Length: 195
Image (cartoon, helix red, strand yellow):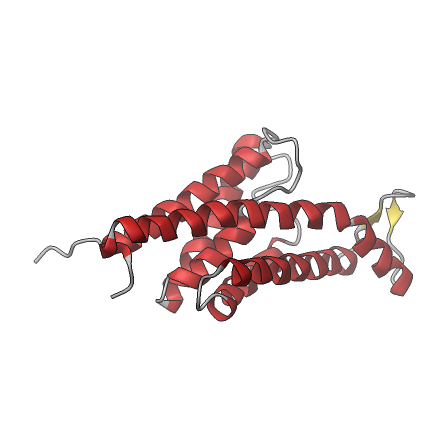
């Protein structure tokens, strides 16, 4: 007996794939804002709507991995290798953002989306920049390695603020498209709603 694809899951998968395509386009610097990316919104969206935990974490992580391969091997022509340094930190942070979607977006409201976007962006900023500091990042003022003390960590966090602002803006903008688009589709096509 042939099993049919659940229409809700198919649409959710399509939304996640579109977010990956937008991420690739952003990495090609077709957008004037660096780090204006849909990955925060994609993680929250997956955590919120995909009820199967394995799929909720697995699909966006797989999508992130595949888009990383395209970005690293096609757009950057392998100049940084197959994966960038510290990729495992980013994947762990990304999984945390999916979990935020499960916890903070059990009920999808504008207020909850804004709160989740803020929490996700602040977490991504602090954790990703701390990983840069831990793995020997560079002080952008001097082009020397960051000092291994509180001042070095603070400098790393401070120089990451512009990236965090764009990540937050991307999470809010793409979150509006993903969440708003799917909520609108659910009202037009009741089969997409959770049964």
